[in-house]
Length: 138
Image: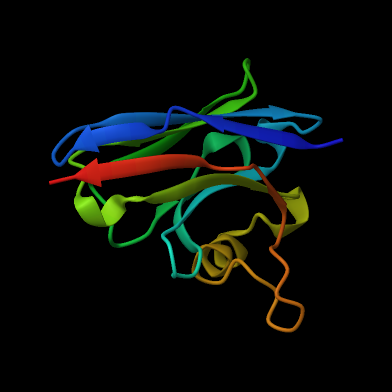
């Protein structure tokens, strides 16, 4: 059974930093691709960052480029999202997600970040954690 558990969320002032962690069980992060998404109240879930198979390529939404960094620790089977220079608009529930190797080419990862749900069923692609709240105040 695949389980993803996020941690590290909290409340910070604008300009501050947080590091989110995602612990995976029943799933090998190094053999598949991982993503970070966020959802603010009343808004759709959006992709923030992703990391390809083996922790090679990384992908970022334009809104977080240069401020957020995703990485993984294969020995610990964990994925991280380092968030610097946080802004109030970064406030959201942050989710860790995983996709099978079959969906880990660059084009598919980029589409996943843009559109994480199936266009017909509305279900989310891949496996998802329960989320961790990040609140940034000005």
